Image (cartoon, rainbow, N blue to C red):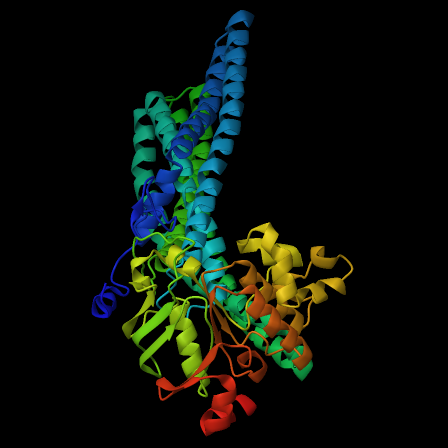
Length: 591
């Protein structure tokens, strides 16, 4: 393929869809990134559990409504001189209803949790898949705290929104059963209840609308506080070194107070909504009781029927309150679903092709053909297969731009990257990143052992050699557990130089066909750096390696060095020759 053709295909293809309703990155293809799309997906994923829970809850609520009816019938039977056998039958029937009620409540609660907590888990997995997607985010301003808040608390709120269907179905079943029983007992009383319930439910729905907006504002403030906390924790060592703990505490205190204020405002609305709903239900119950008492005094209701009617009217307050709470859950779920949809719908930074990489990908070397991005202007550079080439950019922005493009974090503005003469864009992102591995100078480590960190993307047999080449075996030797020592979150148990050596060992252990290292030894002393340079050259023999650095110790061991100036190749030669003949190069590596 020609260079022009490669430039045309760079970033132009989209990931293919994998079977099973997920694309090749593992993201669900049936999840529409809209507010309603997220809510529908959360329901569909747990539909069986939700429907089952709704049925069990409806049975439970209808049994609850049947209790006052059976009690009233038992009272009437006793007052009219029914025999002991018939009385025992009514009491036995009452006990049987309680047994069914208890079993339905237990099963409904269990299935309800599966439908809500399970949906929250599904959404967390969908959010995690998007966060870890190799295609990245087009926007670089997204805070990690906001993303974390959306992937956890918002996912939980959307999952809990599924309870609306369960609680709503149970409430509607209870209200319908209770109204039917009232109609059978007294048509007039039943009609009053039915007519009164309509405006009551409408008012409940209207009162719940502000909850969604308040819930969204609350979650946004919580996300900001989470982001601030995460930022401060990452820089904790620097803050202590500067003696800036007080300023950091003040910053977090301000963010936390804003989150607290938003939470309190949302809680006030929630409490106000519940209080008004309870007041409306109480007024409704008073009216029903008064009307039923009048019917009983006029002889239109028996004592048992009056007991049943009042009991049913009092019971109906519960389902109405539950329905109001369910509507509130749904309102908060809508606010969180909107934030979840924004995360899942974030545009990708770049896409990849459909080609599969092989262990031989990149054996023919790495070529940058007219590459343009930021300060890089039509950069042409070829690194032959098996070469160790140093790249010196006096402008750190240019070196960072080169690393970002090679790491496939951003698409280039122009030009193409070729592996063995074939465009890197033709490979899928996972295959491309497996062929060209970019290791930053501040690579993150994980909370595990040194060995686990190094072996995370390598065969175990390569770990000892990689540790030795990066001089990380010396790091392990001074720790109590050796390579099996835990190093804490982000490697906080290690010094800066130790972390850098472990991260370098991890990159070397991956044995990528093309390895790009960006300033891998900025935190180590010259003697250690010299050992790393020798070990790096030996271990990477026969593999293509690009060293983006200004370290003269590392550059001395390169086959050749390329100087980038004004966005293009300004000089190309041996380190010693450039150091002697090129003043710009000399200033860059000896500064």
